[in-house]
Length: 85
Image 1: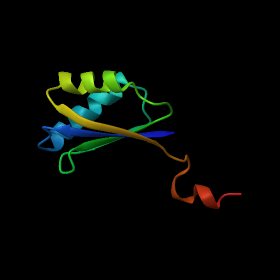
Image 2 (image 1 turned 30 degrees about the horizontal axis):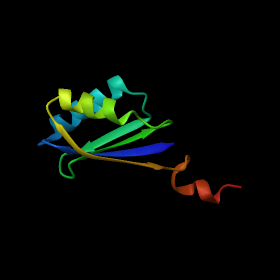
Image 3 (image 1 turned 120 degrees about the horizontal axis):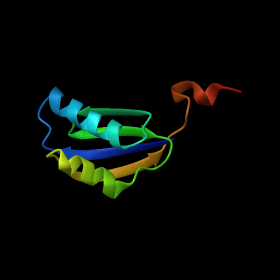
């Protein structure tokens, strides 16, 4: 599982967050996406790494600007995965 954090300039409210989330869900195979206008970012969980150029382009077409993208692997199973045998 991969977690992609996208820094986004231009989000001002909850509707902006919903617009970003809908755009990402409709164009990419993701497990989860959450956006925060207060933090200026979207966090995306996916099985495979996303195409960064395509992600930047999709968001740019909605009128927002991607200022940074970072990707890191995450463990499946959440907080208690390490306690399972």
